[in-house]
Image (cartoon, rainbow, N blue to C red; front, side, top):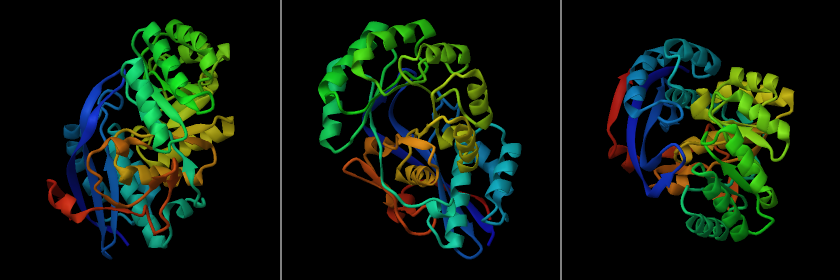
Length: 367
């Protein structure tokens, strides 16, 4: 079974409300879906959700890169996910988000060809697991109210975005902890906003808040700053923007700069490299989280399959679809009582609503 057709679907997905982090604010996202059709008629799907402030990808740059990648994938055996990853990385060394969509679609086809869900194709087993929900950066009171609402919706862990002035961020953390009570896991993500001294000030001032971990408190390339914070051993430090691939993961391990790693398919370029990061983390004994950008349930379902097959991934941050006004996905993962439930159909187990696809601009890149 080989890839015989490559289509690119552009989808505009507005949010219920603007979502703000320290780096940027968004009222919605424009995602690209890659649709690979095999010579036997099977269809594999992947999703790319750009985050210019983090990955540097834009819809325009991804569209241009897709036209380069399509001939690389056309005619390739569906099961050749590693060969595809290597060829795509050589053809387009950057554009990790776009490459992750092609990689996802290849995995979807490969698992369908094998007649098994993707988690089983990876060698894992179907399990439910909790995901947090993320509170957008806002005033302490608004963030506290949002966190309470998420708990009422069944979520069992809360992640909050911070990253302005130190005293403001301390107030946000304290307000949310008071709102959710002492027993709900609270995670804090600064998205590179602080210097190491500022981060240390926040960590020290919020020790009584029992934060589960602080995510990417300092700029991406400030590995010494991460190492300094880890050395203080106040609260576990999670690297996010500092780890795109397995080489970054190994560098962090050698520098003793993180307690945890955040893997994102859009950063790593797909499931192949995500697996390599997980292997480094497993060897070093560093638990991981699988996070997201602004994907629909299609991209999140692929990530959920990965979690079910990799024990070193202890945390899930698969919540971006909650922000979307429209859910264009048929099948796929569901969140019930705060737990991610995986489909057991072959492949990723998620497709796109035909009426939604019909409303989106679609370009055939190769056939």
